[in-house]
Length: 176
Image (tube, rainbow, N blue to C red; front, side, top):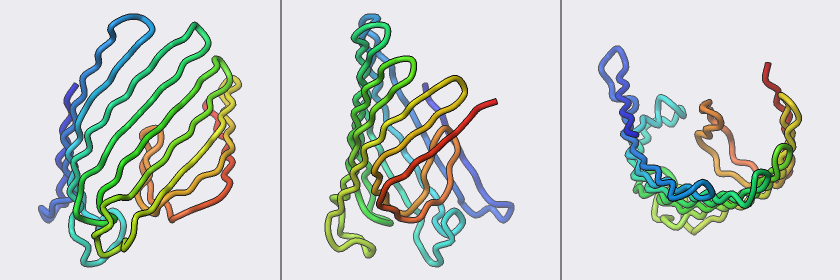
């Protein structure tokens, strides 16, 4: 799969560019691999209100592995890196998710900012999280410890700006 986005303002100012590609390999019914690359450029002034900030230009390779133990339990591992000289610099990310269908999921993840030679970060920073999810019908409840850096956070196809946060977070969502 390959996607391309190209967004300019009415005044022809470059706002957002993205090219995204991924390949899925499923050697059998219990194992699934996804490997891909994303190239992104976005305007920090427009999307985050940061005056005189340069456009953020990133390269993000990623790999995901899903193993189904049986019909009810599975583990998903995800790893990625983001290479950039802008904003907070470069990052690596890892995630492990254990699912017990149909109700429970447990996620442990960590983001590590190793490219700390930008103006915003003078040292490496670590952003761990551990979250438990419970699904019942159209409802989803989660609780966990989260440490996150400020910036654009995308969940379920919805992207929004969120401030830096460290602490316990509980959420309840429902679909109808």
